[in-house]
Length: 449
Image 1 (cartoon, rainbow, N blue to C red):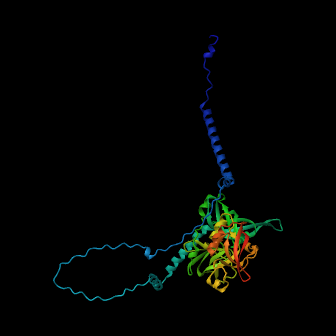
Image 2 (image 1 turned 90 degrees about the horizontal axis):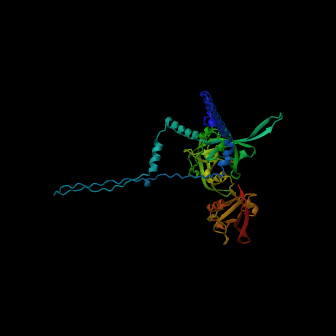
Image 3 (image 1 turned 30 degrees about the horizontal axis):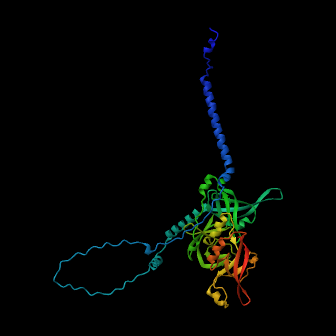
């Protein structure tokens, strides 16, 4: 062999056995599988911690809308025109045909309402009719269970032996909205006065931590929120929000259902009817529809009112003046603006004025020529309210808010919704000064309800 012949030789590595190659690929596959399992576990464990950070950068605005129910009238029902056929021509005859003398007939029409009323009165109800009615009402009450909750305030104390003891209060709640990031629950503000930790018990007994969204102390309501990221997928599929109805459609004699805790126990229900309805009752910063229900309930833990369609139309107040067996309904349509405002985390503006529109009875009773003919007659200012502290008095006539003329309660409520807490509003009133009425401006610091 020459001096450089070794350069021409091929250097071949040692061949691996097939068993060793197989073990190598098995180790690679196992490592990949282990890495995937660890990655999935890490993602599942840290997802609740970072979900709010990545998905709740912008809060979703809550909006409540109700559509009035319209009944189809007979005039809306289109009837197909009858097809007219040409009369057959009879052969002419020379005989004279005599027609019988015409007799005048009077067509009598009976209103359809009277016909239906008479038929209902004549109908004899039997036990099967009662069973069908009872079963229908039962299904309406049961369908509301998925939206009902128990809201608890838990305060942890230490007893004499050093053990932690939980105490607090509870009240009924109802799910009124569900956004992409949270569940909103309407409840009473009494459950929040303990200043403890808030928790919500949903349908099925599952309990989750909650926080207060906002409170309306004037009307005694509050909205609490539960992050959707903390609720299991199974529970999120079961619970639902209730449909909002139109309480202005309720009339005397309408059947209603009380759900929540009417019997003093959560998950109970009962049936009643609207016994009395009166309109344009004066309340703080507005009017409301006063309704009294003939229903036997225990108002201690709170009860909500639903109509026969299963829609939320109000809740029962805890007025001490209610007669036994009769309770006042707070119609949700009168409070929808407040509920919408606090559901979005802000407090509804509050001035503290109880007033009524000027009527001929009021204007005729005051003979002064310069007495305003348009505005709101202030019956009272709530003590320590923004209007009271600004110097507005009973008997003043409110005519403007921030240069917007106020001629009706609708004008007042529209101007009030434009205000925000801690804002300086200019309220113009007419006040009796000596022998006449004079205009005066007051700067009022708007508060939250």
